[in-house]
Length: 85
Image (cartoon, rainbow, N blue to C red; front, side, top):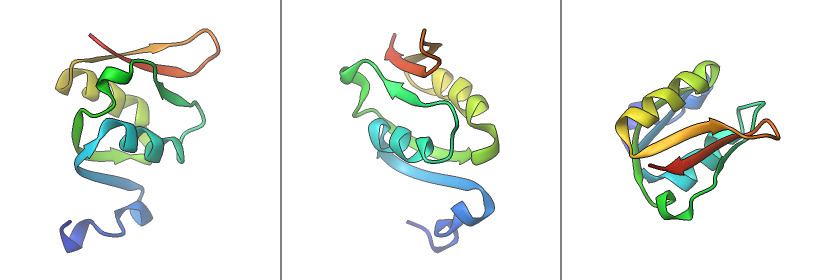
């Protein structure tokens, strides 16, 4: 990890470089009010590289759908569900 990326969370930026989707979702969930869950275990190991702004997680989820073969939907219980396409 690059030295400049360490501590990015202090400025509200979560940075990832080739991390498994399951790790990223677990980490991002620490900063969201609406839980995000992976409902399709086959996508858990997809690799994610990028920056997530704590203030704009839903925008990141939109971009995630463009970058990976995933879909994000609102579940009946109010959580955001990530599944494969």
